[in-house]
Image (spheres, rainbow, N blue to C red):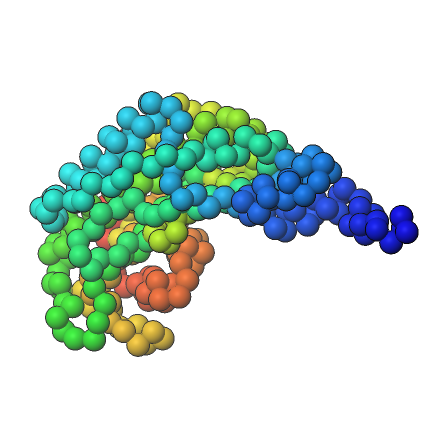
Length: 300
């Protein structure tokens, strides 16, 4: 009778259960697993691969809150340059990833999903970006457009200068957003020195920050964007045959540190292909074949 009531799951060794927990990854699910048994309660904190989906997020310290408010004021100022309309006030979030993750002590690979993007753009405009950090910014690939459709009404001007201001604002906004997300994670990184890879993305698919082992070992009080070169490509009306749509004001920007020198065509294509999929991937690959404009920006 005792043998029949025995839970067969208890026969599994701890390392195998941890493999299962690492495959589950979702933190909310793992936290519920802790209530199953004393054994699960002791093993869940040892999970090494985690995915945290945050409904609302805020830094746990006042400096972080001030910095976030300051960055939001910059975003508003940049938005007013290209579209002088009042922006809705975003509700103040309340949960910190740092607090949620304090119950785990062996995290190696962590993915955090934020509730939404950071940028406020003109109506119809969409911007996506991916930034990779080592000891400093390694690269940032930015892809955006001002409208989708099938008619000539999507033509926002054929010359490069016509919308250059908009494209520069997009680039600076994406770099500030990447820097802000990196900065707001500093406390989490200090508490989890065992981290080897951290990916921070948002539910809207706007931006992604990737931090490798080198970046996670750096302990800086703030994130500094080095002097960079921006290789910009633009088409006022881009035909996407695979998707069957026209993309108005299509723009691709590849940002890399000046110190690293100019990327080869193959290296640049690798960064772009790794950053985007689907419609954005097709648009980015098509733009790689167009004329390039080189701009430089000082560190900030």
